[in-house]
Image 1 (spheres, rainbow, N blue to C red):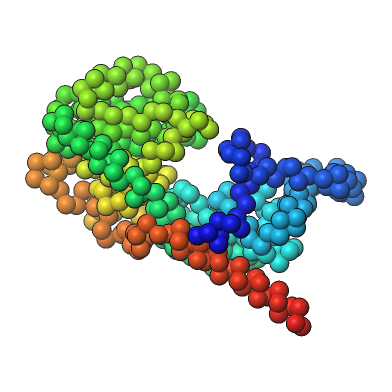
Image 2: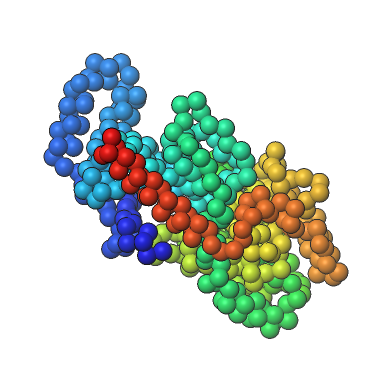
Length: 384
């Protein structure tokens, strides 16, 4: 939408360079901002001595708010839109846009099964969601409305369709009859707060052995952090090499030039080439959901026995906790079809009842409406 594109400025805040068209918000720091910062410190000195953390957060909040005020005023910004909803500087930006009678809009790129107030949703005026949970606002919330326009990244599906078809053909030429897509959520040396490497390796080891031993199956692997894969797999990496030698195992292990992840080969690309996809965590299900939205059978493997998941119900065969049991179901699907395995037909409308690849168009139409509303409000104020 040219109307929206021509009026949009992309900003970064304390992040790596990601293109010439992106503005570094810190370039709008002025001497006045520094003077206000010093004044704020002196003004709150006694309170700061007694309540250091609260005072520090408040001072930083005001300092960053003034930077955003300068930026918004100079560029006549009416709307602040961000997916970094939980970052502290976002609250400063929202406070600044409110002072200028603008609007704030939040959204997430990742699927979260349930929202909670600590994600800062209540700070925004509007929120875009592809989560079917009903969010209860806080009493002092800024939130006016939550909109469900569809899955944020669905516009990418169409442009990946041809490469998915070629990928599927390539694997069928090896004699493989059933293609499995595997999404590795990523893991860490720290087992306390993330999936540990040891646990994550079990899925790799199981699937790689099956692919090596059974010519009926092919495997497409999409690691979340391909730059860390060799270190993460340890000795299992030798199994990966052996599986690749069969030509029935393809792995997208090239990271983005901007970091350790791979943003080019999206989950939908793997899904549209597969008969079934496995996302190896139930706690962060974006890849699994994206796969299901393409119409591919999609399941989660739950290492942590997560409870109260809407996917973990008897009438749904979406959540698995035993690799052997899952493999038995996959084998049945190969032999005679297993319509219940990874079938989201009864729940898919809860996340995106459009599924037309046009979520971005609906969002842009909404932005146009908000811009017009703001213009009308300003006109009415002038008249009064």
